[in-house]
Length: 631
Ligand code: BTN
Ligand code: 3PY
Ligand code: ZN
Image 1 (cartoon, rainbow, N blue to C red):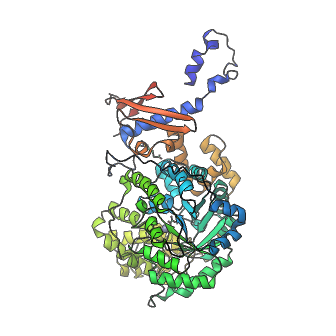
Image 2: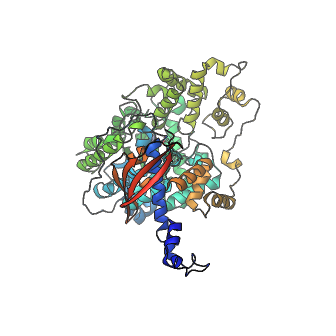
């Protein structure tokens, strides 16, 4: 395009140019960025139309007559919500306000945990951003939108070619009255290993500046020591610090005394003393039973001052009753997912819990008709992600045996399937429970849950028994993640690691017994800024730096893909995953006011070079693109 502009320019044609022609002719550059991005997107669409997307290849497709998702327009003024309240009061006073509310407050998890747990975290920014304003208009009573963190950060770059920071920016823009909430894995940031303290702090700073208001912080072994850096960083940013205890075991089962009521009360007190504004009860497996929830919430209400935010998963099928029990016992905030993305390994159904509380002293005040309209949107969106649906179809009490987190369950099942263990799933689940006990009965949540899963899959696929693992004379080659965990790289669980097994796993290596972050030197951020500039060919932002610090390799690949394909996040989801069919026409907004109208006119035959020509019309202009046929 640039070259064409030069050779067709009047000054060029009549030879009235100098060697400074390019420098002195700014119109040559006009809209070049837009044209460049449009061309990249056309290339992407051509490629995906011919070759498909690696993430959906060989998987179920959405039905051809699927409804196009349309976000409801409530045409209501955007009322002040929790976000303005937090700005007005500051986090400490805001927490007191929360506690003083008679109604239960509700967090909507649809934009994070629900699709993480049901659709392998594959939901794209496009679909989240489209609905954010409907929440702002129609559901201003919500406590927060959980829309960031957990696995979304990694997955958006690794599998969706999109920038997690853009997601945050768009949701913030479209829902200015609601708190934005993220899940932070303490010293593991949004990754799977401990990061240097200054990397964690830098990440929290960037997230806070980009709009995260509520940070739910947890540690995968419930080790408060390992949460302090992130808890402090959140407080320093003036944001709401929700410190979560991860619930495991069963406080009502005296045969399993390790995680009893006293354990949780002490943990909650420690978290309160660490400066938390809110206590999270994070029941990532969905194993807290209704009666136990009553006992736990009641005890915590008596022992701590800060409000309580309850989170669970519906894997068992009875989590809604646990939520109701928690509310009845005084939980201040509860997590629910929009109806059409609720249930099973996701959160319980928002519309139904809101209905159940109507007319009671804890009535949430949310409008169920609007919840349903928002849910209809998600239902249509969900159809487009059929490729990522799991085959889980029913509630299962087996969860009380294996205690897998909702976010892990379907993933591990898929991992087992890919290893040919599909028919032996219950064996994997049983082995998972076994491994947990071998490891000393630990909290299982990312990343510790992944380690237990790695070990269980390894044992089942290689036919290694519990006895083999514990036998000091039997050689076992442990997964690397197990070696690292027993080495102390994720921290120390209550009661420490089982000494005999640890010795066997470490093969003579000495474990660390201090906080892993205290041994990791500070990252040289300036050196990393230089490295980033090398990757990008320009100066990177602090957000980009943060992405690179969390995921060096994934980030570098993502940056390359972004440079090659352009801003694919503006494409509707079916186009992103499946491309266009001949005759299709779509609109995509490159930025406000810059809309591309793209039609696919024809796709040629594969030629002798193994290439196909894809014919488009872009804003009325014919364009064609050659693509290597790899299909
Ligand atoms: C990435 O982020 O690098 C992977 C996603 C984009 C891959 C594109 S999708 C269309 C085309 N078909 C492929 O198999 N790969 C590219
Ligand atoms: C995550 O860390 O991603 C989780 O959802 C843990 O429950
Ligand atoms: Zn969860």
